[in-house]
Image 1 (tube, helix red, strand yellow):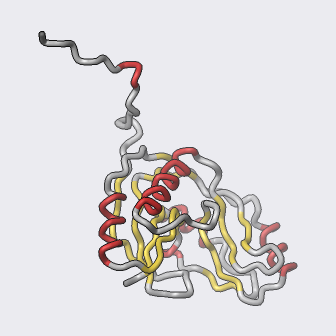
Image 2 (cartoon, one colour; image 1 turned 120 degrees about the horizontal axis):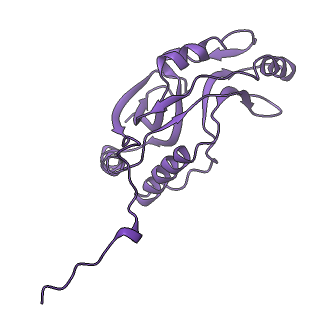
Amino acid sequence: MPRLFTALEIPREQALSLSLLRGGLPGARWIDVENYHITLRFIGDVDFRTADEVVHWLDRIERPSFSIRLSGTGSFGSKKPHALWAGVPYVPELYALQGEIERICQRIGLGADPRKFTPHVTLARLRGSKLADVADYLSARGNFQTMPFKVGRFVLLSSRDSVGGGPYRVEEAFDLVDEDRYESFDMSDWQPATSMS
């Protein structure tokens, strides 16, 4: 069974902006443009029954669509950097969506994700890059920012590459509700049914 994870796709315009960050760092293995994404929840290698259950519950999520942008760059691994990323500023709807996916995964027995959710797009995996070179790369690109884009769905991706970086395949897509059609249930407007007797 392939490795599964939920993610947000990056539109072409923003992916092209990200691609301009490629190059200029020895030891970087750059992610292909078509594989850019924002991971919401890593699920891992699961059996087909569990995968079907994940899809069943993800399909019941009703969250509003929202807009995000990509901003700034950074690295994971402070003393020995192992990945470069582009960041995502805080958007409550993004965290609410990720939180619901996390709760679903725990409910079906996958266990809590040990990592704190840090939304980002991985730009490159690093092998042997010097700390000073990484610092120089990041300082030259710290003002990076894309135009905002609308998130209208999230996807379940699979990967057969154990190292990471793709290629990825969309297994399922889950639409979010248009913002103007999304209404939360307001108990203050609710009236109990009147008795017929």
